[in-house]
Length: 255
Image (cartoon, rainbow, N blue to C red; front, side, top):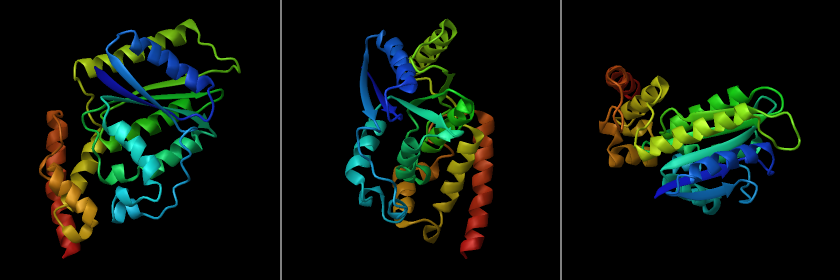
């Protein structure tokens, strides 16, 4: 059974929700899936208060840990993650950004290296592609390889999909399912490999990272790996080279 977590980022069940349900309908047709749906409109997550405690002491000390902990568990327990969001004013809607802010410690302590990701965005105007790429970048920093993106322009108050859009939905859903089924994870971006090896280098100098960051990188074994899963030879070489260079730089700065 393939476990899929879906985070509905819209505050209403409109076009974005409709596209996401169309994707899920295609995925569920395979039969061997378990869907866990979470709506940001239902979890009453307060705004991130910028206390930085998730960085300095750990995510278990977040003042909203009961809510965000539930979401994080659903994300970490799944095989595939789908996040949907709306493009408002050329960026992701505030409710999704608030969720990302609460999970900012994933940028310091990534852990989703064995997950398949998909991003769904909609707009009636412009910017859906920019927002989808931003969300894919976020998932990359969380550890997910290059996520599937499904940006949609839907200029109607009553949700409908054209035949062309239905085909795009089907293709994206099939690709997502098959990546999970075949355990064929997308390659991380060069940026993800670079960031990973920068944190590896930082973890060689304990005063440079917070105690929880330092412990995470050492205890997880990630500090000893060019990347936590198989990557292309060029990315592996660049990661290893960068680690050697940054390790020397950070040690000199920390001396």
